[in-house]
Structure formats: C-alpha cells, structure tokens
Image (cartoon, rainbow, N blue to C red; front, side, top):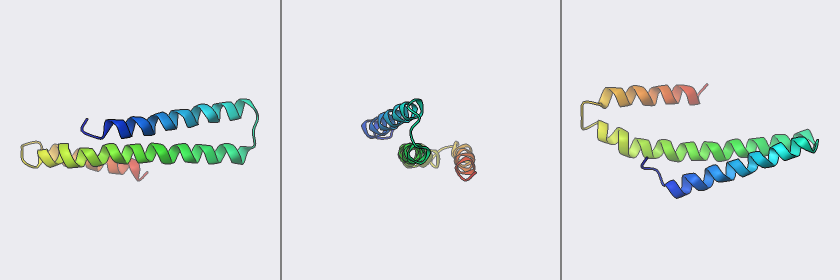
Length: 87
C-alpha cells in the first residue's frame, strides 16, 4: 500500500474509537439521535480513509498500469470500486 500509512491508521483508529463509543451509548440507552450523529461521524471518517487509500491507488498502481499490460485490468478494477461507492 502506497497511501500515507500514518494518516490512514490514524483515521481508522479514530473510527474504531467512535464505534466503541457508539456501542457504549447503545448499552447506556442514550438518545437515538445522538447515536445516529455518532454513526454518521464514523462513516465520514471511514469515507475519508477510503478516499486516501483510493487516491494513492490511482496515483501509484493505476498510473503504473498505464505503462504496462495491466491497463485494462486496473481500469475495470476502478470501475467496480466506483460502482460500489455509488450504490
């Protein structure tokens, strides 16, 4: 993986901490809207981590594939990822 590992790790640890907090909120029967806000915040952090990983993939793996026989494979791979993100 060519992405900034420290940045991605920090984001994922943040999301993990948020999810642990959400589980505690559920156990404590906290207000549903507060729980929902925390879930959305966790989703935003995970989305940001995913964007970092995919941006790095585009800059390195896909870029390099355009100079090789892997070009069509990498393009198809990115199309599948984009389809999943847009669902």
